Image (cartoon, rainbow over the protein chains, first blue to last red):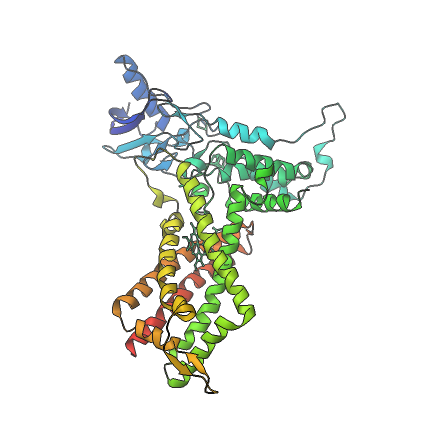
Length: 252
Length: 228
Ligand code: HEM
Ligand code: SF4
Ligand code: FES
């Protein structure tokens, strides 16, 4: 057990229709080696022992690869530190006696389910609208390696594909825009020959779904790129912008 | 997929924002080049400026471009308004604690505020000079051939003897500088032009443009005030 004492201000909301409010919780015995989620586990353990409702928050892999964990911590998505998710944020980033504000992702398109847990189904629907390659599954598959792909393109497509769909880009954007996420998902296919046949239809369908979900517009502030745990580049947004422009202009 | 045509979608709005914004940037250069003639306050300089003003308000090709310009300003403002409304709606519940400075520049987040200030300034500015030139009762002078010529120069010079008016111009050029500091490079990104080799150049040109153009604009009222 550690010896840090913290003052947490956490968003509590009983359900989707509850108004919700910030509630203050003092936490003792925090070790600087704990992850932020482990610190919340300690607090929840306390709350359960006292017979109170534990704080709901999303998490799964706890190693920065699934994109489940969220949390807007002290005014930043995934808290202070770059290229990390909340499960990779450690309490050594904070000092004894600190006050820490913890809020859910805030966006019309990410409604709160309970406390800090939000519904990010909007991302799934965008993905389902076109974020795939229709593969022939009849048994005569083409060996992927048989198609020559320039190394630079393969690398960029892979960089785009590292997006874990966490939604930090939306949470951090003043406009709650989902452009970085959608751009990553468009780019990972647009850069590869296998993705080209459906490229036009894909970008149009995904942007259309993005708009339908109620995300804001991109002002190119660049905040998403800074807060993205995977360092997805704004270059992908530009790629989506030109893919969409070309698709719209040449559409029949 | 009717909505995703080049009209209704979020991206389409940004293309128009960028195109009209860049057109306004080109206009700024042309406008500045004309205005710099005001620095020559001699009688010949005044005559040259007045003849230039007549040319700009009567030469048909310039008139065509100026209608395009009015349309661009109105559309840029209208489109910016639509975008801002949607952006506000996209986050109905605000964060209790925010630290936006950790990841972005304030002027990039405040484009709508800066733009609105520019719009207010444009109205004042056009009322004083553009409206007067087109519809006002201007003092008259004569051109080189002795024909009557509207004396816009005197109107401008008189306006810039007032300290508050000069101060307004200088402050508003600061506002324009911040709008351009983000807007210039942003418009290239909106149009999909981002390349590791060229984007750093675009960003540097943008900073240069955003600083130099408003400084020269602001220099004119200050110069005329000092030399009045
Ligand atoms: C000479 C005057 C102006 C110039 C040169 C100019 C230029 C620009 C440029 C280049 C952009 C970037 C577009 C992009 O991000 O793709 C921009 C954005 C913007 N402008 Fe202007 N602008 C001017 C006046 C105005 C006015 C009068 C308004 C509104 C009343 C306005 C509102 C906006 C807004 C809201 C944005 C941000 C759009 C966004 O982030 O999505 N601007 N401007
Ligand atoms: S682009 Fe980055 S911040 Fe956005 S969902 Fe993907 S990994 Fe998360
Ligand atoms: S819990 Fe999987 S990324 Fe944090």
